[in-house]
Length: 470
Image (cartoon, rainbow, N blue to C red):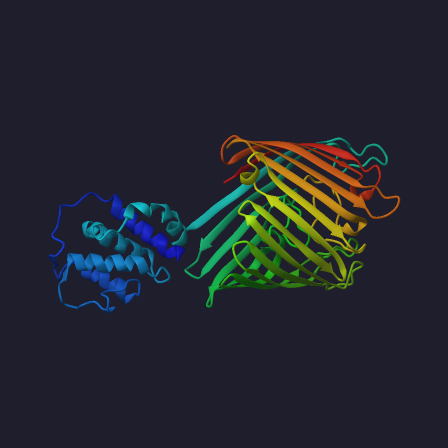
């Protein structure tokens, strides 16, 4: 439907911008040798346009300008974008210009459709590029030179100048059913590499097939974390993905294979197979529910596990567009935890947004697989072993003062499970300045005490970030 509206937008916009023509009798016949007959005939033959109410064109019978405009108006409402080419668009433009006065008389409001032009231009061809640049200057409290002194934020010494992220995205609409997407870049010190490349294919029955190296982030899709705090998703996989939409719900399934392993340093992301399934249903505009499963196997013996099964059920209820209560129950090989989140937008409180998250870890063996939660500033705050805590509180607030200035605050308190271990505390304050809509400068201070329940693992960081999005 969006493609249809976009096509109508281009045609109508051109008509609106065309110079005024001398008034023509709308009931005068269009001469049989007029180019419009051939144009309409070609579009009809290709299935782009429909004709008279009975679906036919009258052959050698002359048509009045009013009848031609009426057929064109109906056609613009039902034009089949799946069958339309760029040449068809140009032909429709010419027809609308020719019959502009008659279309105006029919009440076709061409002046209200120009906002949809960009969608058509994107859909009909060419490459689309966009990207992000992030550069960090990090000044930590500790440099690691003192024996036993934790160096939590920086790799060497107490200062790092780091190209945190450089990414170029590119997308090509191959045809009406196939789209190619790729990303090349540097991420937190890695070498330049192609870290995403995949195709999306529109299948019948409202299904989409994806193949290649893609992102899976079901927790992000449900809004279960903020910053970089996913537990099991927000990871790049290589494999196949199928999405099926139905009514108010959707079903997804994927199969992937992870490459590479270091037997000396095993991780949960070592070489092996991974597969998953997800079902989400929105009962109405307020309440949604999802069920998610991911399975892991490993090609080589691992000191961590031979296979892992993770499943979780998540739900959310919106009291209004700006107030949502959501949460999830997780099970990883019988070890469980649950979280509850209150997500309040600034539009509700006027002066600030508010994210309040409570996590209760039922079992000591509960771990996450994605990089440690709440480590947005580089230090391992809790690490992956959440079972070391009884529960965790996390709060974030952000204030958008105007189009240029924003401030934010974060606070985490993790209550240690074991006697002799220490509670973890982490807090952050920061300010962002948008010099232009694309260029942002950020100054932040982050402080951590007793990281990962280790007494005395304390450090702090001042970070100056420059970010450009384009």
